Length: 615
Image (cartoon, rainbow, N blue to C red; front, side, top):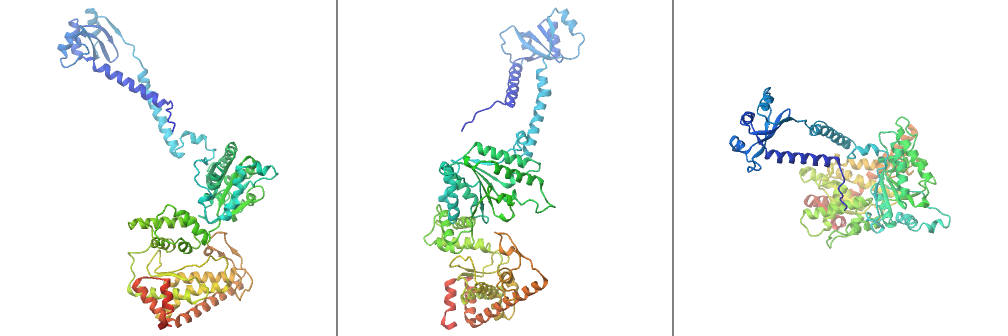
């Protein structure tokens, strides 16, 4: 690394002060400080000469013998000489000049140099004030100093050269379709003449769309790593400041700098922070943001992609983007980076476990099957949690039990060791979870049970029944949805069968079942009351379905929806209650084992259900 030392005014001032201090110290250490009374005696004895009179001191030469006698403790510089230097503090004395004239001693006045006083009185205070000012401005501009005020219109992109980008397509799994879409971009950046000779051009903008954590930013870096080009990375929120016009200036500077460094990739993360649709919310309009967006649209129209500048962006909210951004000629290629399926999750887990020491009992396929809906960031977190749990237990390898505990932590929360249930509550929770577990085997279209536990976890979860999907679902039939509702209601049904009463433990199950029934009627058009009619749904593309907001068209329609939801829930509840009543022996056996062991695996649940003595 080149560590050149640049000239600075601070270095110069420090050197001057050090030299002056050294000079004064060396000079003062060998000059005798003669008291004024002794100086007057030296005049009378004619033991002084060449007197220099200043405003506050008197200096000159005195006989060495006189100084030795007057100041025996002082070590003179050279006591072999007849005369030695001395200095005395001047006191008010009107007769001094007359005495010197009478003794015929040569004397003169001293015109004092004001350089040092000027430095001490003016330069140093001004330098201190400048230093404090720079420090204050530096803190206001996050360490940028005075230059930050001058560079406020400069873009804040972090520039990575090809040597800094260690990511390639080999480090990405589970999103093969998105990778294939972006191989064209890599090929164009490597051999642009292959495309331009036929008159074609690459899309100006590539928009990566997908849920959070699916690897959109990683994918953009991989494109730059494969193409071996520079990578300009910044967030959409970094364009907009409190000063009007700053965002537009930064956009202009970004594209100018990118064209000077072509071929390269510009990547804007969280594009929705900058590209939100204009004119939607007139009360809360932001003029600065809209000016920045207008400048971005202008720059995208003006630059030539054949020069090797590719604009990429990522968002998980494409529905709120301005339509002008998405038209042909701007972000005209949209690449979906979706949640991986079970094979994709297994491939992602194998990448993240490359440097992890795995035990022989670890099955990546089982871990992948246990994590439906998980994205790459979630899977990386599970691998890290499992490794930390193994290290905490002083293990030399990460076992399958560590992965199981890590998944349970992510899905249901931390295990509560200090929150112990009473025997009465534990008894009820055991029957509640046994109802869920047996129901998942009694209905036709439910995922099989992987594990059932009555260990408290997370916030308010006193027990949990984990199911292991055999495959990823992309669509559901009406009966599959009704069977899922039945499994959710089975815990409450088991409590009613055993205790002839209910508890608040089924509150979360009832909420999920009611929401699913509402979607069956209002969104999927599967209810009898409405038939193939869908009530308007206000939802985002990648938001959790539980956050969707439903709007009814009339009061009569709302009443019909409510009645149909109630009918579906009651029908499912009566059906699963009847099924569990026939298997009450298995229900009691499973609850008993849960109370004793706290956790029972899926194979044990199947054996209990199929035990001939409990049939």
